[in-house]
Every structure is written in C-alpha cells, then in structure tokens.
Image (cartoon, rainbow, N blue to C red; front, top):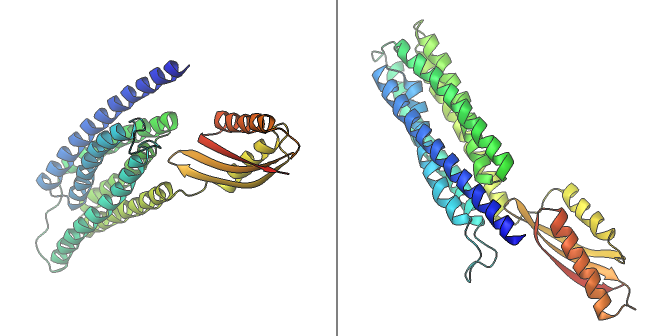
Length: 298
C-alpha cells in the first residue's frame, strides 16, 4: 500500500512539473509579445500588462523551484516535512507582485502627467488590440489549467497562480477596452486602463499575502471542520468525552491534538486501543497528517 501511494505521488509530481513548464513557456511568450507590441504599437496599457506577464515568468520559475523543494520527505532538520516552503513561496509571490506593481504604477503616473502637460500622444496601432485579444485567450487557458490542477492536487501555490491568471484576464480586458477607446482619440483611457490594471494586480497580491499568512501561522480551520472532527471522535467506541481539541493547518492538511475522556476502570491496554482507534479513524477520514491522542480518566 505504501509503495502504491509513493508511485501515485511520483506520478502526480511528474504531472505537476509538466504543467509548470508549460505555464512557464506560455508566460514567456505572453510577456515577450505584450512588451514588444506595447512599445511598438504605442499602447501604455498593453505595456503595463506586458510587465505583469513578465512578473508571471518569475512566478513560474519560483513555483518550479519551491514545489520541487516542498515535495521532499521529512529529514533530521524538518521532522514535519518541507510543505511550508510552498507557503513561504506563496507569501513571497504576493510581496513580489505588490512591490513590482507599485514601481510600475509610478512610471504610469509619470506618463499620465506628461499627457496632462500636452506632450504629444500617438494613437495605438490596431495590432496592439489583436495582441491583447490573443493574450486574453491564452490567459483563459492558463487559468483553466492551473485551477483544474489545484482541484486535483490541492496545492496552494497552484491556487495562487490560478487567481493570478484570473486577475490577468481582467487586466488584459481593461487594456482591450482602453485601446479601442484610444482609436477614437480618447487617449486618457489608455492611462486610466493602465491604472485599473495596477489596482487589479495589487488587490490580487493582497489576497495572496493574506492567505499565505494564514498557511504559515498554524491557523485553525473553519469551525465547521473542527466540529466534524469532534463529532467523529465522540462516535468512536468507548470515548466518553472530548476534553480538549486543537486543530492547526499544515498547508492543505491538518494536525490534531485531542484529549479524550475514557473510563478510569479500563486497563492501560484497553485505553491504548481506544486511543489507536481514534488516531487511525481521524487520519483516515480527514485531511489530517497526524492525530495525537491523550487520554484522561473520565
């Protein structure tokens, strides 16, 4: 059984690696095309979107490195495994996106000030529009792939990357609208579109940072989940009470520490069997990596 689980894990890791390399390749293509088209066809909003895709290249590279690290087995320095490296990456991604976007936002503000000072502005070429439309379609594909992968593998980093792609879809859609309006000499909307893109990306980064902090600080799951675990423990044979129950997150899984009340007339061996039953049942029926059971005389 252990070998079977190990083989399944290795298969999933290979599938994840293939997915991440495909995502990296598509992000490189998108960043190159958007930046080239943004500058070549005079579209500030597409330029901003291009830098957004350039950030995605960095994100994909970090995902490949960290997911490989987080899959390593426990060792003498990490008795609980390396999964929290993924949470650390998740947090770093949020900060990286946030600060990079602020820097780009400053550049957009400078361009907008130049526009208000009546510096000459050229109409963006329609090719910029076509590039933006193609980019949206590719981003929809990337979002779908990453979201389905998250559903299958339950890896928080994939969820973060999927949300990042979703925000990119909205950002590029804003760019499309801005380019269309600029064709009718509403040039200001190119800059407004650029600012909206920045706000979308910053909002996404805050969501990622908040969720990453949740993973890294051993936060408890929802009360509903804790209630289900408590109920399952009380249903075990000869468990008379749950005196204390603590559940903490370990990325997408949990660690459980529980004190149960058992009859004081039981032998040590009988009490131990009850403890083992609780231990095995909770680990088998919930996303629990380890359930530590302490017994109290009831």
